[in-house]
Image (cartoon, rainbow, N blue to C red; front, top):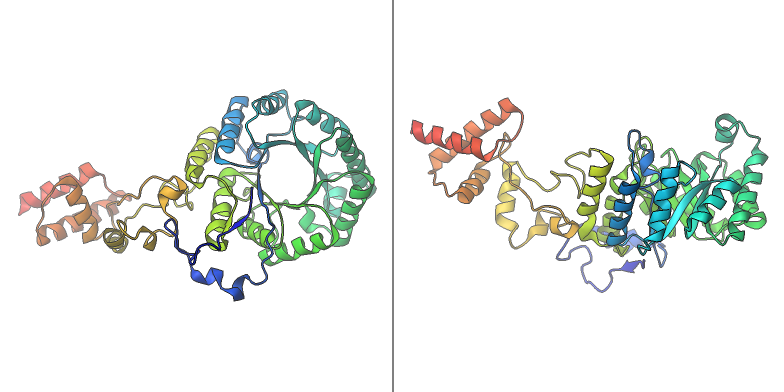
Length: 415
């Protein structure tokens, strides 16, 4: 749970597991950073992640994912919204009963009955939502503005009576009027109850610079722990989350794979690894299990991710191009971070594979023939390479080992 600045290392940008830019650690770059002393990862895969179109988690799915989240060291698990369905309620109750280690939260609308149901499930706390932008309240909900405040006060007050840690969650906060938002938070804090406040970028419309500003502005006015919940409609979820943390936000809401409504939520994998390696902030999770967790969620959600997805994509560490194969041959055994900024084994990824295809070069040929015990002279190696490039081009994919052996036989036969 602790935020650990890696100051004990003379070169925090270069360790046995990663090698990033030393510029990240220059005083001119870091002098205005004000990260909190402690950071928690609040995982929302089981609730907001499941809101991705087409994703359905069964009760057993949710339990399996929760167990793996606990194993990796996530600090909080938002197990779902019990009001959604009886199956969701059963899953939450079972996750609570298993006493996995992390705090277990549920999500609630600003309705007293939702709060009471969550309490009955035995959760440690709740994230309680209310629309916070005038246009969403008036157009989406068809409510008068005062109704949003009144509902928030009544529901959070009931949460306090029930002893629930209460995180106030303002939907579409980043498109609301700042004064209106702060008025809402102030009234709920004074007339209702709030243990923490969440900055919510529901539609992913915040810029990284605005994320810093928004965080600092709210911290000036709200004397409560600050949580951040950002979406990735513009691909800014990770950058915005990091900027908010550097401005003082204490709890990160994220999902495995970045799954979630529309373009998804802030992905945990990229966020925690960027914080660790680029900023020296250790969230305390077990990074070596990131791929194990991501594979489980991929399997149970049916979500496909790009093969090149950082750290968890199937092809994230594989090499086809000739120049990179040469680098691999020269550096991987003794200086692997020269080629891979974060080592695959550090994040639990499979070892790099050297592929054979259109972009390959003689170093790929050397690596493959050595592995297979094949001897080729310089001319034969070049002839094989040319055949490989043509075949790969025509098939629009790398070639297999069997196809490579066939090419070698063809070249040797023509010699």
